[in-house]
Image 1 (cartoon, one colour):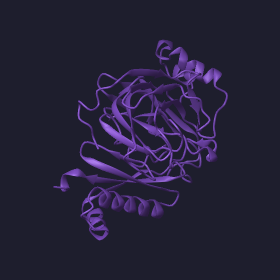
Image 2: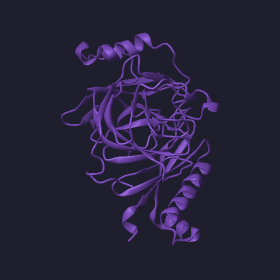
Image 3: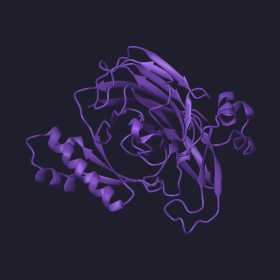
Image 4: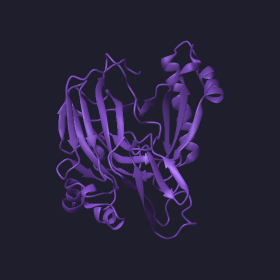
Length: 328
């Protein structure tokens, strides 16, 4: 549940900036050495970088001063990449976190860190793989003061609700190196646009310390993310971590000020939808034990909105928005 201001007063505040020593490119793994160790209740500021080669930003007309040296160094020095595409910052080891616990991540603030982003289309990807068969990319200027992005002639998109598309913990060691592309039990590339400033993410923990990482900054994205990308950029996020030994989860869940969020993840849309509805029913009867599963199924039908989260990550996503206001 959401915490009061008094409850989220941090014990300590730390910062991780993206550089070659504290990023892992394209994968989650229990074998990644922690970039930082914190206690439950501590706050960590994480700054990531765009997934755009710095030379491409320069060719698009952005000044060298807008491309930090650490950003250049990551592209120059980090050779261990894949199988996924995302540059992840971390991981954070949280003392006391054990397999079977839940890691509560309070997303206290997310802000734009760069004055540009990009959108990219690749052949045979996206919602229309047969319709768009050539590589296409646009570097997009971002006005961080006005919080807008000029995406095309006469088209200005608000970028006032940025979010990290990929946030996750390490998978079980038996899974080895897991790609950042598909979301899963480790959470990962969920791409839920609602998870910006002031929201909460809950993730089942699979290894000691949890090993949380974040990346894949999005300035703006529609539900679906249909062409493969959002406005991809670099963000600065402030996260607070709590180890929850009073919770048990099989799959990640989330929370905003007005809604609880459940997720359905599967390569098949029908199965993803079934999972989202089952997660809704499970959540309702767990939180409100006086309600039956039949009543919870009814509530899912009459009051819960299901959104297509993304269609481009291999494992497709549907998330259900359960309104808090209906429970009186």
